[in-house]
Each structure stands twice: as C-alpha cells, then as structure tokens.
Length: 427
Image 1: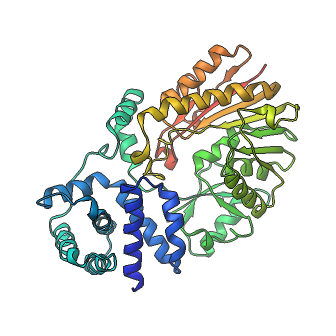
Image 2: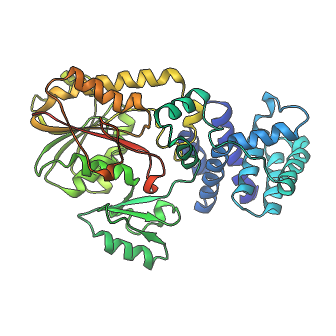
Image 3: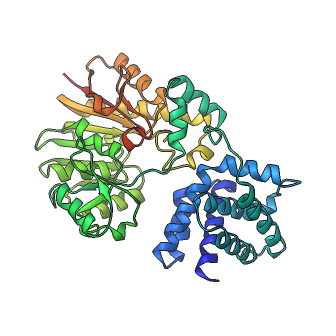
C-alpha cells in the first residue's frame, strides 16, 4: 500500500488498540511507528491519533446521529478508521485526500464491504460539519465532578485547555550552551521559537518537531521537557555539592535538569521498573551526566539506602496525570475512580518512607502532574499533621495558585502542563 494509506491504517490500528482494547497510547504508538520509514508519516499518525482522542465524544456523536444502527464489536477497526478520518478533517487536511486514503485503508484493513460506508460518512462530515460536544464530554462523570468540586471557578478553563494540543517545550543543557545561543540555532534552522523570561533553560517551539530535527539533540545539547516540569529544579534548588534523591525518577528529566545546572550534585535516581531505569541511563549517557540510576522501590529504603542522609529529596509521585490530559488523552479512557485512593495511598507511603532519609535542615519537594486536591493539597496537609518535624515553605507566585498546602499550576496556564509543588523543610 502507498504511504498515505499506510498512515491511515496505522492510525486506525493504534486508535483501535487504545479505544477498544485498553492499550496505552504511548505503548501503542511505540509499537506502530517504527514500521513507517518516513518521519513525516510517523508525525502524521501521531497528529491524527491525538486529535481523535481529544475529540472522541464529538466523533461518537456524529456516528450515533448518522448511523441507523451502531457499529458492532467486529467493526471496531472501521470505527477507529472513521475517528481517524474525522480527526484529519478537523485538522484541516484536504478532504478529498482524506476520503480517498480512508476508503483505500478500509480495503487494506480487510473491510472492502464497508468502504462505501466510510466514504459516505466522511463525505457527510465534509458537507455538514461535525456536531459540537461539551468541553468536558470526554471526561468520565466521576472525574469531571471532582474537577468541578476542587476548581469550581476554573473548571471550564481546565476542560478546554485539556482538549488543546500541548506546545513543545525544550530544556537547554546549561553546561553545553546558553539558551540564547540555542535559540539562535533554532532560528538558523528555520524553526520558530520563543522564551519565557522567568524560565532560565526553557524554549517553546511554535510548532512541534521530531527530536531528530532539533539541532544538537543527539549531542545532548537539548531535551524535551514541559516548562511546568522544569519548574521542579527551581522549587527544589539544592545547594552546591548536595546529596540528592530522586525517589520516582523515570524518565529522568528532572534529575537530568538538576545535574545540568550543577554538576557537583550527587544524585541518586530510583525507579521500580528496570526497563525504565535502562532508558534513564541511556538519557543520562546522551547528556553526559554522572547520575546513579538504579532499580529500587523508594518505599523500602532498607533494601537500597546506604545510611547516609540526603540533603534534598524529590518525590515526583505517581498520580492520576489529570494535569497532562492534553499530552496523554488516553488517561480519560483508562483512569478509574478507585485509582485515586490507591494512588493517594502510594503517595503517602512514599512521603513517610523517604522523610527519615532527609538530613536535618534538608528540603523535600513533593510534586505531581495531578490537579486533584486529594493527591496534592490534602496529601500535604495530612503529611504535615502526622509529621511534627516537617515545615511547609511557601513558593513564589510563579509556581501557580497558592492552595495553602502547596502551589498548583493548572493545565494551559502560561502554556504549561498542570503541576503541583510543595516544598517541605526538616528544621
């Protein structure tokens, strides 16, 4: 099949795996994209899939209105192909090319008897437009209620921002070059970008790019990391030469950022999954950073800690990921209400386990990419109540909304992801 058909087939199969078989978006893309040789085709598949997942409810409404009876379980690939076709039209791709390639893709998927249906529905979408859907339509009811309860004044903006494409932020390696020098390299390469004066190492691209198109990426000059995640280094701010623990470190970006800023830091980066640790080690090697990355469970320090206290600890805890829905839209498909209590219990266990490892006078930063109070402000409030030697230190306004127990950045604010930060000191 030609590349246009192959990309539509690939997008449909990824969407089928995510929508109908419970697969994660990241894993499904990782399995599908290497089969496409042209990076432009890989980029197109990603764009189609993300657009389809961000407008899932809208596309389902179209199928519900336009089909005399719902598609059956055996038609899941065709449903996914139709979502991919609607997404391409929503992205502004030429309608005739979208329709022709999608019809051929139906045949390539072994569904020649449904090629006419694909043609008719995509032509109707071109002619009539797609129906509107509420901004929170893709959110499970229980989760939308939580967001409204936690953020009643900002809920509408949260839902709207979470449905938008996320910008691509870069982190410049402070010991390899300066931000201004790298910005000039981007402009020389014809890539539009801008900076935020309050973010020392961050650059925002005007359009996302494959990493192999970024000057100096393979040489460790730059990495991809959202600006909200880059704020972690500012919030923790360990002193020179400090012994630092990153308790939940994968994929390693925050440890790397700390080491890029200060090579004198002695960083231990933990993760429970050996595969993720190997990927961290590859990242640190690309960036030429000496970081001790190891597979270990931070909640069991008796199995890995050498007894020497840490001067600073980062707990970037596992969470609901509700602050990064725009980057991981499948969160809204896979998250279950019972997950929140389980995640909160893990977060609590992490804080209790690593706090004794912190030296007197040391700092612990608790962070999540969640926007839910149970995982953030309520988690910190409960920890302070049971930990008499912990003191909350206020953070500046640039870290987000003051919740009374930490700072919350909401999705889309200043172009950043949703993120929570709470800085705790041991007197």
